[in-house]
Length: 105
Image 1 (cartoon, rainbow, N blue to C red):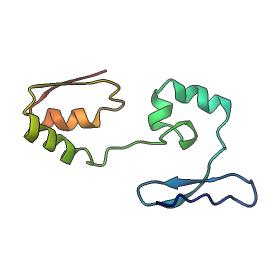
Image 2 (cartoon, rainbow, N blue to C red):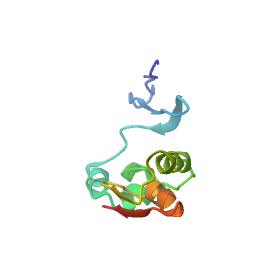
Image 3 (cartoon, one colour):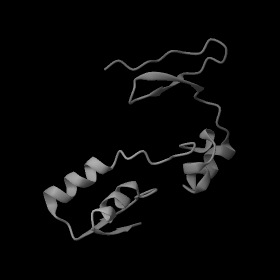
């Protein structure tokens, strides 16, 4: 797989690459300040739902964890699942919809 290393001519910074579609994103990498990085390190609202400079930039669930949750339930028949570092808990939510007792930290 070839990784795009196009450099913006005006700012001399690498462009961000969407690893799912393998297409460059219009936003330039390198615009984050130390303030952005400190707030992002707390993994709070700013990191997940704030502006893109702080982290994910509005992370919303798209249903992508449902096939994985169904595969886990069909393969292992779990009664309880503990997920460590579950972030926003999308996988846990899908497992809970399948009647699995879940806990995330």
